[in-house]
Length: 144
Image (cartoon, rainbow, N blue to C red; front, side, top):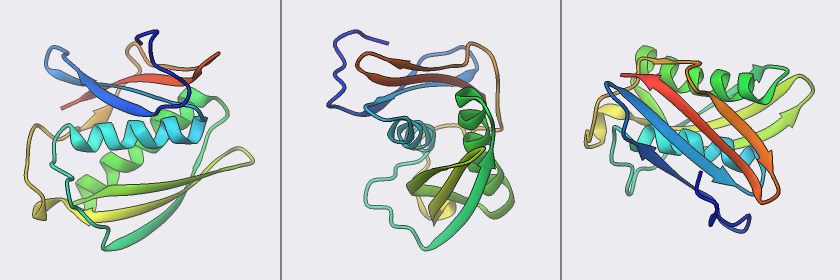
């Protein structure tokens, strides 16, 4: 992650990676960083400009470590894409004991312009989720 990122800002970016998708995200809070990671993954293969949620999916992801929460949340994104053809266009995240409560505002992926290859699985390769002096950062690789 670049050191000039400030804790006052949140964002994400796709990083070139051979035959896979790599996303980096950053934010002042853990939950905001997770939401940025979700947005970054979805924007890597769909144009979400103007997309609106048409239904809400409420899920709880259970995990003890922050890295496990990141993987479990992104596995939910891949699951809903694969099984229902939906992607989250907005995410509400609330910490709960042993995990995270997620309100996923879903749009039909088929109604959105495709901009890249859809993710098929979350990997543990070079996975990072770190709290630093200027906020949270994460990096994750997905198979496409």
